[in-house]
Amino acid sequence: RLLDIAGRLSFGSDGVINGVNAEAVRYQRPGFEKVTLRSEGDLRFAGDYPENGDPSGRLITHGDLQLPAAQLYPVTGERSTLNA
Image (tube, rainbow, N blue to C red; front, side, top):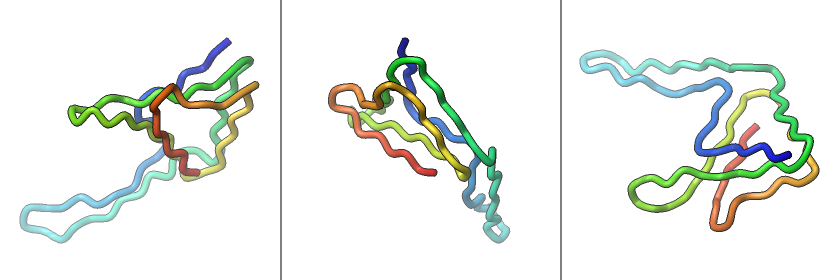
């Protein structure tokens, strides 16, 4: 059994909202304390393909990240980033 993680996946977010005639506002939504993506087989990372053709994937969480699986690997030519 295979679990695919494709494109950009975020559990929580943070950033800045720039107002037209106002100060920038920083926000943070932490999401979950712990994220577990469990596969009974492999876990494969598959990116998205934006217009520039540069494949990329991203998995972000502000908490702990657990990835129990038989194997973790990207698809051919994939560049993925895991941030936890």
